[in-house]
Amino acid sequence: MADWKIFYSEGTYSDEDGPPENAPKRDVQTIAVKCETSGRRIERGSDYYIWVPDRGVWRGVDFFGMYDYMIDPGFKLVLYGRVLSDKEYSEIWTRATKDPDLPPKSAYMPYERKP
Image (cartoon, rainbow, N blue to C red):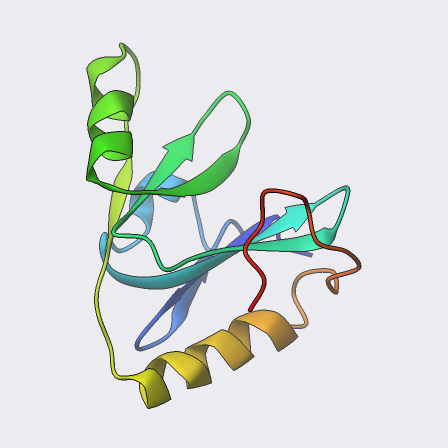
């Protein structure tokens, strides 16, 4: 079972496909992450997605969040989102919420946006 999975307009990439630095860098739509508290957390609607190596997780951030991330020392990995039509995004969202490679969502975290 995957710990995280990146959903693009065309296809996916997960930790089972290889290390995060090998993931395609553009056209990220959502990133589903295995979460001990809520089963599955989905990062979405962000311009940039950053890899937090000491936690082994992806986080969606805006420009200033990406800039803040980049000025700290150490390994950096940034993926870039892309705007789609509502219909195209809705199809990808459905894939991300129903993907069998990650545990089902069991709760919402207080900071998490609800669909």
